[in-house]
Image (tube, rainbow, N blue to C red):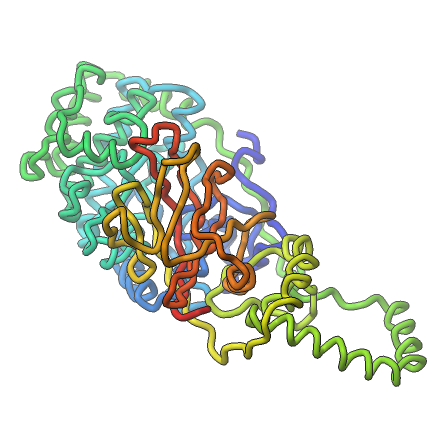
Length: 529
């Protein structure tokens, strides 16, 4: 396996270390945050997961995260990725698990195609044994799916158990939104009733069905339609390998009480492997599917300097420092007067931004405002000239002494029948009301409002509260066409109460107006205008 298929180099915006773990490479990203490769003091490879800033700023998330960490520390199973270190109170919170050298089930199926029956038996037995260990500690996974199953040379490893609850939280469930990934939910999850250990068994069967078919058992498409099929239709077991259909039928029972316990699944699979008398051959196929282990980058030496804060300007070279001293001696008097003038203009420019434009100036002391998502220095520089020009014509206001706290909501769906209020984005309202409405009366559809204004942010991603403030101050747009919007597009919204939201599009489906919708991640700042 080529190292470039697994490990990505660190970028300028990545930290060099987290809580003493020196980072060697990027491994990917998920719902909780970004994942990095590091090593313990005895050179064991670990995956370090760093929490997203908007989650880290949420005290309720920290409590849930700490609770899940304490439970996960107790899980010890041959088919789980052991949690070895974590801190829910650090800034940002993080956790470290043993690194599993192998692809995810998603990657393996994409590379090789559907798996043969002997390997499916090994997969289901391994996942079931992992669930035994997880459930024994009172944890429900809630989000078992192909990307959360890693394929090591000696069997599968189930990861991220319990994290779904920490990320989404109880507020997510109380508004009728299920926790998990639609294609791999149980009917009781999909209907918002909550998840139990039996729900994990249903997800195990769906994950194994993906491995057998190369696609989700309940089909693809918008999540709302997949959930409808899971709740209201029976799975087509004729698509699955005939020898495994009796087990799939039990695991996919609509009634959770009729599903087998993980221990029963382990025993059933082992009996079939033994009856075939070719377990060794199955393991050989397993090793072929998991592929050769990637060459893990070496630990970063302690002597390697930690990169400075990417927001800080680099120190001047010695020759440059000498030239600066000479210039200061020649122009000090004029410089004082000019500096006062520039400071006056800058203060006027920063008023409506709460100091945000200062970040775009590459100043050595600049830092992002509390609760705002960071942009890269490059993106700030690329847009700083236009934003400062706009700011010079803006009315002067005093900066707020305390920045409002960022409140994350994900996912947030808007349809013609379901509008959104910034007061509670998870609680949909009648499509003719709300701060953000959705309409397909025009080609490509649009977001509309009687009470809110919109701005579509252009350029590199990473808009902050200050960016939204600046552009919303001048916006009178109450309808935003979606023709130019794609996944990752950022939309700033301000309602009549002065709440500001950043809506980052995840999915846009407008090809069929009668069932069109958008979903996205939303961050809300209260009374931020």
